[in-house]
Length: 196
Image (cartoon, rainbow, N blue to C red; front, side, top):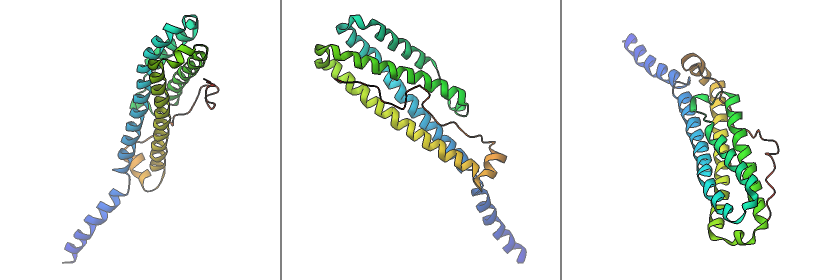
């Protein structure tokens, strides 16, 4: 009788011990980080998709701004050529390269929008206004996606470093910390100067 009671007590104790050692919480946190990174990539892709339309709209009005337009197109090409997969989220150099390319694109867009001031007809063009609004909305989405990604990374990194999840994180999953997204472009901490 005593052996049967002991067996019945061991099963719940083992289940509780295993559930508290990161077997489920570590992969859950990791998948959350990967999903948030997907949101970051999606918002950057949305911006990249809008840029050709904006450039074509501005081209019709601002032929002499060809250097700025070319810089934006080249920055877009570079930014979209750098890919960071979910498996690369622990590689600081890849995250920084991705951030730098998109930071350069943000600066180019700022210069492009600032140059529009010289073209009053363009500022009142409905297509331009719609594209400008979409770009502004996308920049806000990028900011939110980066914030959400960084929060998911913080939670994941905390999970794999705290007891009892550290047991499952190190022994079972071999978990490594992931890199948060940080602004690497010079002057990225300041909004572009755009006045209309």
